[in-house]
Amino acid sequence: MRGHRRFLLIGLAAAASVAAFGCGHRPSSQTGENRPPVITEAVILPEQPTPDAQVSLKMEAGDPDGDQVSYRVEWLVNGQVRAEGPGIVFSTKGLEVGDRIAARIVPWDGMLQGQAFQTEEIALWPKVLSLDSLKIEPSPLISGLEQVRAVPFVAGGEKLDQLRFVCKWTLDGKALNDSGTVIGLPPLKVGQRLVVEASPVIGIKKGHPYRVMATVVGAPPVIKGIDFVKQEAGVNIYRVEAEDPNGQPLNFTLVKSPPGVNLDPKSGELRIPVNLPAGGIRVKVANGSGSFVEKDLE
Image (cartoon, rainbow, N blue to C red; front, side):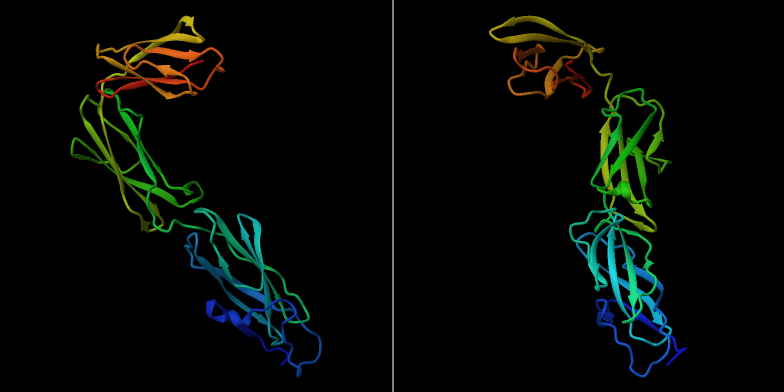
C-alpha cells in the first residue's frame, strides 16, 4: 500500500530476511511509481568484539512502498573490503587485536537500489585484557637515578585508542603515591627494590595486573675501547678494555655475533676470523652487582 512505511529490525535471529540482490519480492497488489528502500541506522555487534569470533549487523531499514527489502553487505577490515555478499554475520578469524571493522550496506527492493549506508568502525579487543610484558627502564636501575618508567606492552595495543595503563609502585615495600607509568623518586640507593604492578584499562574495563621487580645496582663498568692486538692463524685478536668504578671483577660475554667469534669471559680477549665481514658483534661487560654495559664492535 503506497505511503505505508515498514521498518525491519535485523539481528542474528533475522538472517532469513537478508538475501542477495535480485531475491527481493514486490507485492503484486502494488502499482504506480516505485521508491527506493532506506537504511536509517546500522551498527555492528558486539561493541567490543575479539579475534577468532563473529560479529553481526543490527539494522533499522524500510521501504516506503512496503516492499520486501534485501541487502548486499561489504565487510571492511582496516578500510579494505574483506568479504561481500548477503550475509549479516562476519567472522573475525585470522584478524588481530586493534584491527578495525566496518560494514557498507546497500538495500534493494527487487527493482530499485537504495543509498548505501556505512557503519562506524569498531576495533577488535583482546580476548582477555592483560599485558604481554612489562619492563622497568632504564635497565639496570643505577644508583642515583631520580626518574624511572614502566613500559607495559599489549600485542596490538598501539591500535587501541582507548588503551591506558594504571600502575602501583612500591619502593622497599612502601607504597608510592603515583599511578602513572613515569615516576619521580629520591635518588635511588644500591640494594633498594622497586616494584611496579601495571594493569591495562579500556573504558571502564580493567584487565589483569602484571608485576615486575628491579633491584638498584651500583655504577656500571666502563668500556674504554676494543683494541686490536695481533693476527695469528687466520684470526684477528682484540682485547676489550674495561674497568669498574668500584674495582669489582668483570665478566665478558657476547650479546650477539656471527659463528666463529669467541670472547674469553675473564680476560676480554676477542677472537674474530679474518674473513668475517665487519659488524654484527656486540659485547657485554658486567660486574658482580648486576650493573653492565654493552658496546657494538664497529
